[in-house]
Length: 148
Image (cartoon, rainbow, N blue to C red; front, side, top):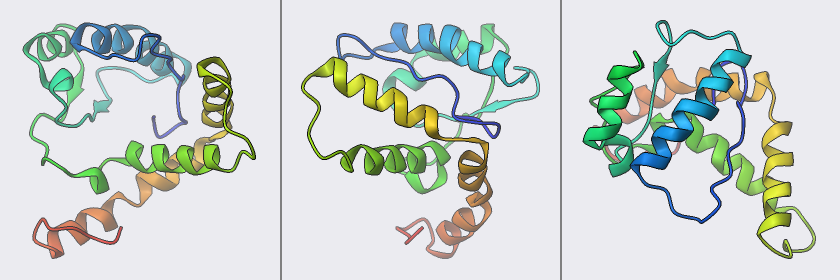
């Protein structure tokens, strides 16, 4: 997800993500997304959470070797402060509106990809633009839970 739009969706075929696969996604899908939106690694900042595959030694080495600016010190358990978490929630809501459950992984992926691609720049920007208020709410709550 970027300020310019949601970026490309990426399917994980065997359902398991590890550091190597995460780095592959960064090197392919994220790179292609950034090229599509004319974004430059050197001026963009990448935000991920504390998931072990995001913070593994090999992933950190990959980020540094590829010149990716990233936020290193991020509070644990802070979904309010990550715009993509709100986009994931929005995606789940859209998927829940289908009358019938998907008949398998292939149909589910088709729905995910369709709904993901329906998000436009304005939707993504709305989530980014709410971040100052969300940060203030977390500070006001002294790091506790918020209603954001």
